[in-house]
Length: 364
Image 1: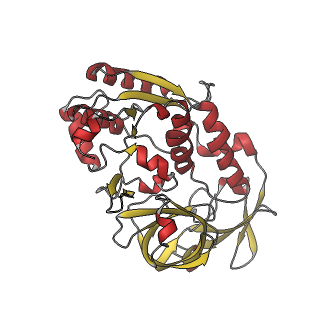
Image 2: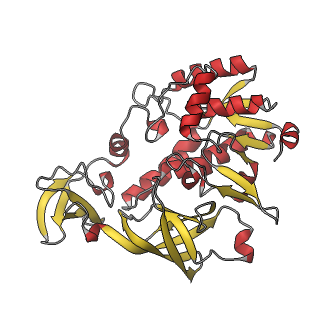
Image 3: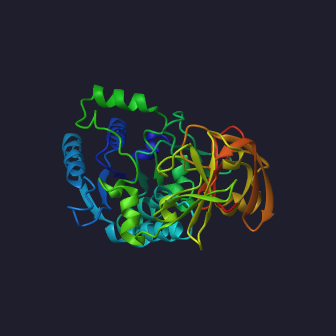
């Protein structure tokens, strides 16, 4: 979309208080676009226990909007988040899977509940994501990777719907993180040196394990060495642990890697070693593949030769796909993949790691 076309659109910017969305605001204004800024509230109303640093966020966001002469509105998606994303997270870990709340937050909240509440009034929804888009010769809008391999967030966006992508605008997607910091410093933005948020944003100062403990409690179970079948320790609930986990098991003589769960008997199976083969896989299954560009699935299938990710890291894998039908695929990797866990999303890209096709849930 060129600048002239952009000027004709009604643009909403999701302003978080962080440096990325701050620079997104700067970029839009520099290009003659004056967006309405909206802050999505998703934290709990219990500020003492579930502090999401909302006050600090809003101070930053208010100062930025004042500087650029744009409006700021708070959109309360608190109940939507806890009804949709939290339910998904708790049900997944209870069943022994490894969820990704950030993926569901983009689909259900930032481009979902927000659109129902306010976003439907706008042509475009801008965010500070590190991602890009491009239009092909058929007019399809594709989700494409950022030049920053560390910050690229296409994996977090690989479950959004086609209509959500058509409204999405990523003003900083072509930058690297160090460039964003440099712009913020040059423009003397109030949050230029603010640290990036870590983990799941709505938890604030509460740890993920405390969050799970609140909803699922504790239940002691055995930790078993899968090679010797001997009990070597105890845990407080399989939901506190994930396949591939290496730290936080409280076991001596390691390192130990979680390689399997028996959910019904609440047992963790572990294997010893720094890079044990049992902790790696070269093939696994995915189900319910979701195409970000929905129209593409009607005229062609996923290519056999692809690249993919199973977690948010700078690294990706080269692989091939076997189509098992009904949105199910068998993924073959060109090298061992560590910590492949049921419930994770396997994100599929083209062979050049450029276009993101979408993602499917790992089932093993």
